[in-house]
Amino acid sequence: MTVSTSEGALLRSIDEHEIVSLTAALIDAGGENPGDTEEKTAKVLGEHCRALGFDVRTVEVAPGRPNVIVSIGPDERPGVLFVGHSDVVPAGTGWTTDPFSAVVRDGRIFGRGACDMKGGLAAVVAAMTAVHRAGLADEYPMTLACLVDEEDTGLGIRAFVAALPHRNYSCCVVAEPTDLVTIVGCRGAANLEIEVRGRSAHAGQPRNGANAISAAARIIGIIEGSQAELDANPDTDLGPATWNVGTITGGTGTSMVADRCVLTVDRRLVPGESAAGVVGDLRSRIESAGLTGGDIDVRIGIAMEMPGFLTSVNDGLVTTAVQSVLDTGSGRSTDIWTASCDGGFVAQQMGIKTVVLGPGEIESQAHRPDESIAVQQLTDSARAYALIATRIAALPAL
Image (cartoon, rainbow, N blue to C red; front, side, top):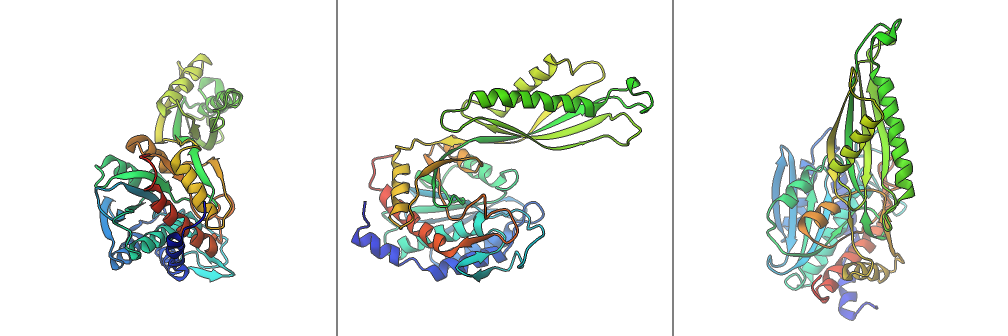
């Protein structure tokens, strides 16, 4: 597909300076999670979009943590839903610049959230601005749902999908950093907390107690054995489900038998799996190994569950997204994602076809000191979003 004359005019109207300016303002607003709130970022975004004449709605999910829903075009006509988040991971140490004072240098913007994902938010707003200024919003409605708490427990997306939508959506694009590759699926994720209770005793006579750390170590072995089974039976599209033991804490002193140990575990889920099902299977394996009963007690809790999604590579949303990126001059195709994101909630609970597509590279640029993003990719993303929004309307109902 080639860009039509009217599309070319739309793309030329996208203002790189406006994208850079908004990205910088959003970076400067902070929003570390955990440790801060997204309130300042929401204010910057909301004021910017109100000044453009957009419809802006805020929904406070928790104190100082508002979801911001920005729309153009009529409510009743199906449009494209873009999803992003206003929080960023903590800055940490090792920066050569102030992480919350954006710096533009050598064609890149530096600052915490530049890649994940203040730049993506700015690119969506730029696309909406171009469509709005061209007088096309009535024909091509667009919505940006900028949500809180994506980096932690997902308060924002849970509140968004639980509420009755005030608009119709034909499809969803999650503007997370994908290096402009159209992500058609990702695994779900569950965070588990495994608490092992034993019985304390003097270390001189350890047999008088029941060591919770030793029992936890055996549970880790059970998890590793389960991983070998998962590796041997991968999902055709998304690959194998995975386990990762993230933290282990336990015991009170070297000369005491540990009476408590806690593991936190990440479990990536493939289609057909649920956190409850995973917990049930793990509990059965632990009991079969003879770990429970007597003086050892094991409790497994689900701290967080995030669904995955999968959209066919032949779906109209996918082919439109890929072609739109190609028509900006950025040659990219499709892939699956090892990360998880809010898109799974949209696909599962709202029943909307979903892809992930955005500027920046999550593996090499996000969640690290001197986080940055290329200005050119921000502009290319905005152009691709504008093309997707205007081309989707010409397709049969998705």
